[in-house]
Image (cartoon, rainbow, N blue to C red; front, top):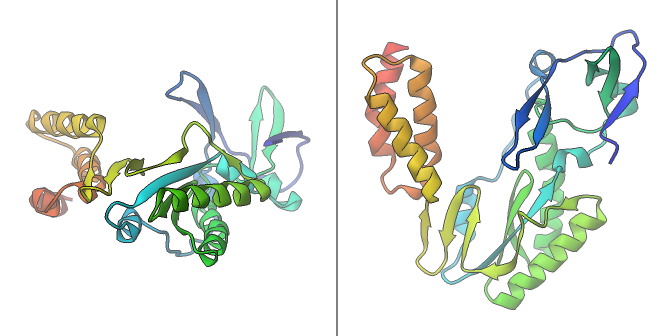
Length: 251
């Protein structure tokens, strides 16, 4: 996978800055900062499947698996004539991305449209699935049905050039699975938050409460964390509505 190419500088190229971010495994991820380039890209509305879409498909005692794609965006090549807009400079040398980089405004829409065709073809074969960017939840009424769903999905995405992330995928059918940051239990039909996410919410709320004055963006950040947990919190909207109203009044 030749993601980055060294090139010669040319007219009408677009140079973006780069920086690195630490990963959980101790390694570093290079980020191409496309903030300025994104200002020149027209936004096009599109619809993505949501976590709620997945919940609506789950039957009681259903078997569940998941298939995660590794470096998913890098599987999409960029046309030669457009690569000059995805350049950066390192140690006085010029480089460009040859495939879809993280951070470009059109990436989620483009990748979602591509994967919709993949998942639709699997549904025509009778398999139940829901995809969200590089992750997918596969379902089956029986363990065998779910296993077959996994096999066909892996075979199809692999034949199309995608790389399956074996460490993040769950190939063995289960009745309780982690998907998009939540635990889904088909036996109890309950969605729960991982302990680490619960701890994060408690910590952030306590820090906010301990301050005499807070900046609007600090409140907005905590609200974002609370909103992201709503699928696992019954009547969750009632808990943050007041603070959201206060934030809007003071903005």
